[in-house]
Image (cartoon, rainbow over all chains, first blue to last red; front, side):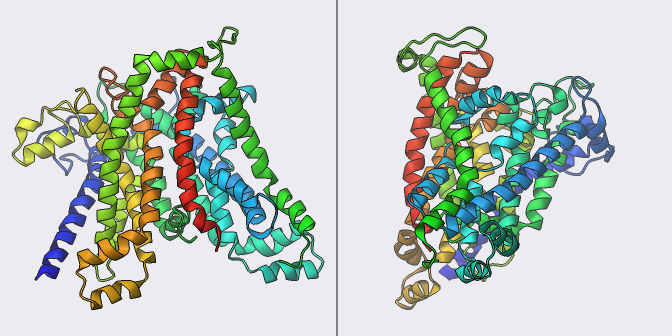
Length: 281
Length: 296
């Protein structure tokens, strides 16, 4: 009897939490498809009385503020995310290989220091980072969103954890054949790092796509705005006084890419999460 | 690899990690040193800085705004962290059962808020908390609790920290639930079986067998959760902007306003240094807990 009770409690708890977790998304999607006057009603109308799928187009294309639209912000975000991810994959696998397959003094201390920086809140280093980006004359440029995140303690650690599992015999065989160290990495090791590349890639992509505080402080021209930055200013300069239906359409568009990427690469993402939390990578 | 000479290994090892060395010098060590120096000046952006020694730190110690910020940070972080750790552990235990039907769907539902961004979901939560006509008001009305629907979640000093904490819990619990779940899976099945054969109830197995083995993970969750939540700018910015009456003006907001809006670069740098040192202490503790995973 207690075991069946336990089962029931378990299902109730999981269903309850899932509802808490998903209801905001359900409401967002439903509001995104409504007419403005149907958005905030008591009681809630989950099914739009009149369907307005054209809200998405309007949210995407209607100029906001000084004439830029959400599509532009989205393109900027995509550009930044792809550039950061590409750079991060190349750099972190190189560095991860160095940490995984070579012995030198203070190696583990160095790795430990780099890893501990990932546990610092980003907002606590934002002023120093801003000062350096200003000195590099990268303020108000999309490069400012790529360069500081092209290599992080997190991506190094992930790449390192995956590279450790590559057999040393393979590398030694390469040396016996007279290959240079860089050649060994490019020809023999890198092709075997598929799982590491996908995991580092998905985690970097999501991190970059969701950045907000950093673009907020370094970007000032609207043509450079990224999606979250444009979204946060959604209420300003719109044609309607209250266009929550367009907010929600824009929000839906913004969560679409991370959701799709995550659903596609869930396994690889979770493997990264396990490696980062100190469990086996 | 033992056959390859140490000098050779050092040379190429350092070569391969050199991008990281450069990156850390350029984006961590140098900027933090720069901010440390800045924190000793009265620099306001646009006018030349003068050396003032530790004056900024002395002023911070007596600045009621800074005390407010610390208090708001600790309130929000405390509220959120207690819920996150409790819920994450509960969810992981509930999900950790091979016979559970729909388990992958539940996992997905729990995790989805983690991968979406703070701003898009922040817009939704703004409308959820709207008094009288918001989503929460609508739900309460549906449950026959209409008299609660006028609560000003983001505009009352008592409720605003709670509203921010709820948003944070919603967004982050899934992450730590998956961390715990991975930890539970790593507890050997034989140990759990043995406990059961010896007549232990499921609750006893959890508390006496699994929990002690999960201790390093609990430390990781608490410490990285603390540092992760206390550094959050976005949920506060999206829901309350620091108000009402400083009730949610936490450290990240304090730093942002002082540096980027009031242009008090020296003062904000000093506050930032204190915040950084505080977080660094926590990060070091956490990283030490993680060290065991370096050797495998």
